[in-house]
Length: 410
Image (cartoon, rainbow, N blue to C red; front, top):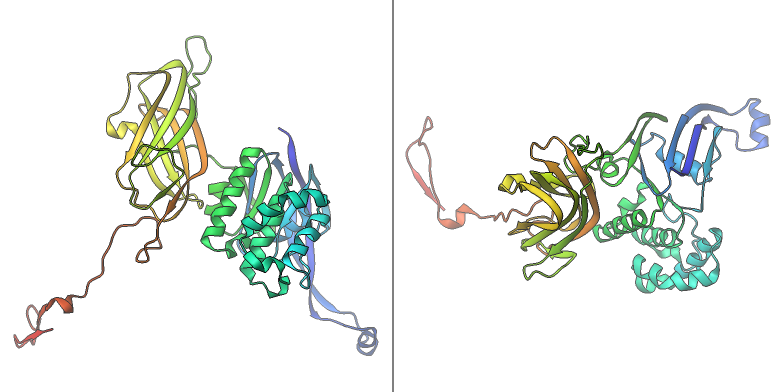
């Protein structure tokens, strides 16, 4: 597989000054050098990022994530080791990185594009999409020094994402944006994956990078403590494929997914509480005996919101062959607003062998206008009440010591 990025034995250290001579005069008067400690941000870091993959760098604050991304972006030069990239690179690593505070947002779009060596005529063609994605309205013609941090992020990400780089580097500054903007970013990541582009994202949230990346490396104090591929199998079952009588593997294909509303129309957006049908399409060249189909919904952070097998409902066809579809009908989708990834699989009836699996990146959007339940994963319809308004009777002393049996009525 072709490589997009190769990091080989990279180390980077910084000086932390406890006492510093800020001028030649200070150095002559004190008669000694500045005092500093050495801080190693990265130590012998090596990994490869395949072209067209989404690669995650996870770790706590101070683990070296941002330093590593800056080295890949050539903002910093490693003290040791080498970094090679194949293709154009765009990065969103800090709030307003590459922006000139005195220039307007529109002027900064063209400035950033020129830094990325994108011709002006190409920027002219992409400008409407950039402005629509950023969503900052008339502020685009105001100096960026007047922008809020959220506006910086939206415009910076929009510029970087719409320059069509081969490699996009994103630090967790995206988390500064609101929920709607984060959904846009996830949709853009999904689009990049479909187009075969490479994305490297750094975050302190291990769950988030596991949910959206093909491979992750976990950093701790500048060293890689874990490097692994992420299994996007629906239920993490073994993938040992069964063989047919000719020795070749059976190869059913999950050919598509339809999301249907209450009227049977295909949609990509539903509201909390709406009935939804997930229609899974398949094609089987070599017939499968007693195959089970499975569907799963996951949040961008990788949290499983729904997981069901057709076996749970007793739907296990004796023979699965040809082309067909199967429906999972959800009478009321009680999920919070957000984007959801749909994963599908074909398994055997013991759920021990996975014949096929496919992920549909963030294809389902749920909207919810309720103000009473805005957090969590599910909308359970809880209601608050005040028993004092129901003229509840509180009996003091019943079942307690020292009571006098008196009653208090609200």
